[in-house]
Length: 163
Ligand SMILES: [Zn+2]
Image 1 (cartoon, rainbow, N blue to C red):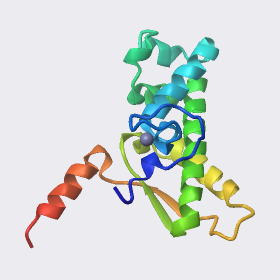
Image 2: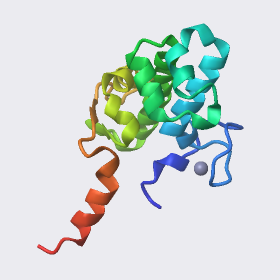
Image 3: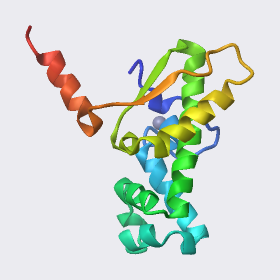
């Protein structure tokens, strides 16, 4: 499990994770976190969430990440707030990783990263802000993975390939 950063402790007494802990990064920096943030924001400000609430038929169980992406691109304020919140957590997670690895580049994968700047811009800003007073590099490149949701399959196929 080395390198599986999703279960790093990031928020004491936080959201319950499928692994049994209540502090895991993946509860704050993932597609499922985006859905939770968007639903929470939409419930607080329904007038700013028309596209999102219509897409999921006002039903939390039907809300999925691509709906949040589409609503953000159509101008829903709360969908954009959800991406800002996700970017904040992603930036914080990257800053934590920088204290161990200090990389010059982060590559963000998974379907949620396919939105590009809507997520990566706030993540870059948060990353720099969290490291502002530290000795770590504050301006690592934050790039979108090119393989999207297929990254795991492509990586497995590459491992199995006989050269
Ligand atoms: Zn966990």
